[in-house]
Length: 226
Figure 1 (spheres, rainbow, N blue to C red):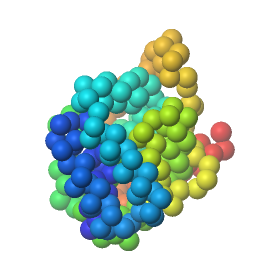
Figure 2: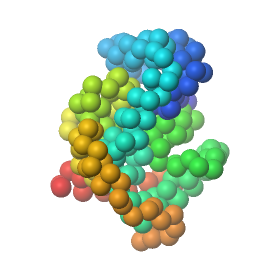
Figure 3: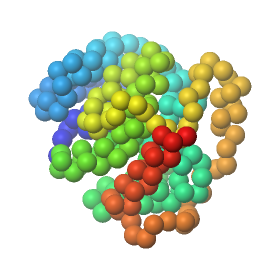
Figure 4: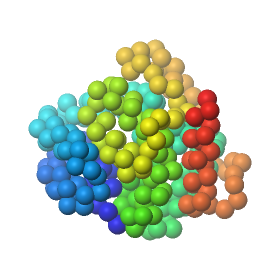
C-alpha cells in the first residue's frame, strides 16, 4: 500500500481549506515513499506551494474552469474510453464491483471512474498490483498531462507524476478530441451528448480486474488508431 496514490488523489480533487493545510504533510509523504523521481517530486512540490499560498476561492474557480468547462481534460477515465455510450455505464458497474471486492464503498453521487477515486482505490492495494492496474489507462493519463500542460495548468505536474507511476507512453490517446478552452460555443456543443446509461450492455463475461483491463486496452487501441 502506498500513500503516494492517496496524496495525488487529494491534489486532483476539488480544493478545500483542509487540502491547503495538508500541503506540507503531502510533500513529506511523497518524499518519504520516493515512488516518484526527484524531479517529479520537486514539480509536485512547486504545485503544493502554489496551492498552500493561493486564495481558496481562486483555486476553486480555476479548478471548475479547468475540469468542468469541457471534456478534453475530464478526470473521468471512462469518458476518454466510451464517451457517453452505454458501454461506459457497464464499465462503471464493473469498476464498482472491483472496488467492493476490495472493501471500498463509493458514496452516492460519486462516479467510480473519477481519477481521484481510482487513485484512492489504488492506495489500498499492494504497490505492484496498484502500478499494474494504473498502467492500463496510461495513454489516457499521458493525454491528460499533455492537455493540462498546453493549458499552463499547475495540475500538469500532478498528472505528470500519475503518468510516471503508470509508465505512460510518450504519446497520449483519448477518444475525446482536444478543444479550445476559450471557445464557449464548442464547449457547449461538446456537452450535448446522450446521458450515461447505467445498466447492462454488450459485455465480456465476468467482471473485476481482467475485464477492466480489457476495456481500457481496447479503448486505447481505438483512440490510437483514430
